[in-house]
Image (cartoon, rainbow, N blue to C red; front, side, top):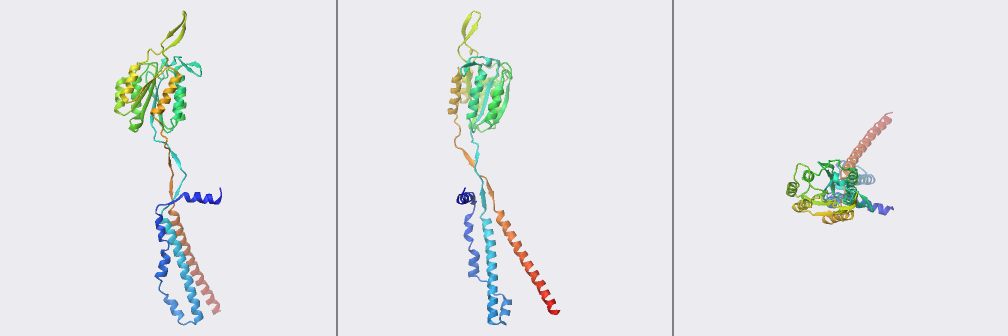
Amino acid sequence: MDLSSSLTNFYSQLDFIWPWITLLLPLPVLVYYFFPAAPNRQYLLKVSYLQSRDKARVQHSYSRKNLKRLLFASWLWLLLLLSASHPQWIGEAIPLPNKGHDFMLAVDISGSMQMEDMRLQQEPTDRLTAVKAIVSDFVLRREGDRLGLIVFGSQAYLHVPLTHDRNTVSSQLQEIQLRMAGEQTAIGDAIGLAVKRLKDRPEDGRILVLLTDGANTAGEIDPIQAAQLAASQKLKIYTIGVGADELEVKTLFGSRRINPSQELDEYTLRTLAEKTGGQYFRARSTEELDQIYQQLDKLEPIEQDNQVFRPRHSLLHWPLLLAVISLICAMAGRWFVRLWRVRHKMYVNRTQQS
């Protein structure tokens, strides 16, 4: 970086709150010329007894002394004006997180989620493994949102509280295991827990994405009542029913086709979404599940207006400090000069007496 670019960068980071105060800068000079100080009587008394040559020398010395005073007063005046203009140093831009949404993800980890009716990378896989892969990608895309994770089986638990750390949510999602919350399905309790965790967040960004493959078979809260509570709290619920409609299984008597999602309560899931202003989705395959989460990205778009913050640090104390130091140095200099003159005079007197 060359000198010109360095200076440009320096001035771009320097700002003054009241720059118009610098218009007072020539005030000491104007006062000096339009309101001259009264002549020193001591000099006038001495000059009356001096010859013309000595008179000119004294007047020159007096003018030089006044010029020094003017320069020193101007220096102090410059520092005071600089401080009064309130200079500030503008720091580097710091990106701020977007306002975003508050997404609570509720994932069913009951025993039925072990059904292997999904395919991941062309290989058969259970429902929970497929959900982990698709939801993790969704989490990592939601830049600027706060995300949390609820897991539910017979009970509902907060696995990850709301956070901007998408990597933590994604990694914790990969750690959940089947039946770690029980064998059954407590949909109502999961909604109630989401309402509790989101009630203090802004009303326009409260969202719950609930994924299950069954019906409410456990818990203390009825899902419909929980949805009514969520609607009163402006919590929007998107529900996802996961599981294939048809699966070929092998038996002793040969292969037969079954419906692995016969326990899925689509009516309740659709009602939950309608009561809260959300939407119900059906995921019969991994591809459909991925498309659903991509559609959620469109329904609840990510905030794109990135905001930045540039910290400001006040610099007004530096010119004031420099002014005080200048005054101290000037007073100390005058004191040393006077001390030197007294000692010099004493030395001259002793020399003359001797």
